[in-house]
Image (cartoon, rainbow, N blue to C red):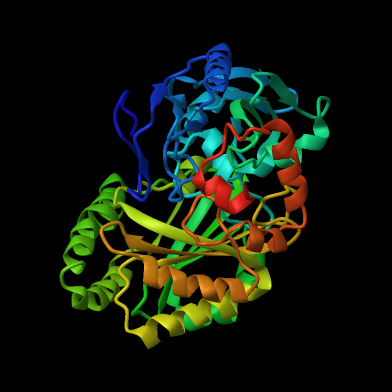
Length: 437
């Protein structure tokens, strides 16, 4: 996504920039030198991971620090089950790093292409009523501030800053390493099946409480929900892997290959969407298997899209979801991408979408060649009416004036940003909008 002297663009093709300078630091010292040099020239600087955010949060018109080479393990604390990773390490690399130590991340989202620093900085999460987002796994971090100083945050050094740094939007400094609290490696028993949407909504609260990880997808123009239930088992549990051919048909041929063709065709002929969606729910989402956690949590997603996701108080998920269903019906839109519903535990991170409340998430998507504006803005109005907070890395229209009302610690975060970056070295247009100038 980054080429020296060339244009950078994110995965969703919703943000792009031609930076004045691109650097590929491979060490903390190299990051420090880059920050000091940018400061001396009066240039703004942004660190970029995998570019999987749909917002402009990583856009770097001045100096772009590509963290591709700042990867790998720094150290392991076997006794406390903690690992310190360089900031550019991709999520899909972490299982291989942890495997020799019998460890795993407690929870993950369904995509693992992001860098660890990008994932925590934007509030990336998975599902499970008793599990927080990835940022809640952070117990320590090291970052370079705008003055070029090394700031260590942990239980023993600057602990009061951890709730801000663990989900910092890239506004406080450049993360160079992150320490995660891990758990013993575990297996997930997965049950995926289509069920009547009405029945799922009627028993939603019970379903969320009854399993470790519950989510569902709904293809508009159908009356079926594709439910996914994952329950945790010890690593020693017997594994029942999916047959390779069946897995390939489900995840490669149907979910990516044929689906990509459908999305492309639907941009010219939207009328084909409803019958295809009804066929899709008959052909996919009906399987049971038991595997190591990371192989269950994450999926391969190769069809390019744009996404908006809002966090709601958990009790508001059903009425908000039903309002979105009614909206699609009323407007007569032909929506080819499913709507995804997930859940997360309350946490105390200052800018977490789940701050202070058990939360549910509703995510809407559109194929990347389609204009999402009308759909997303209409859905956004519903989310706001139900107490929603937007995912920092996914598309939304809110600014600091509205966000301040939705985050009790918002002003404290801004005050810390003002202290660590008074000249706004790490600012860009997106951060100006969501945090204020």
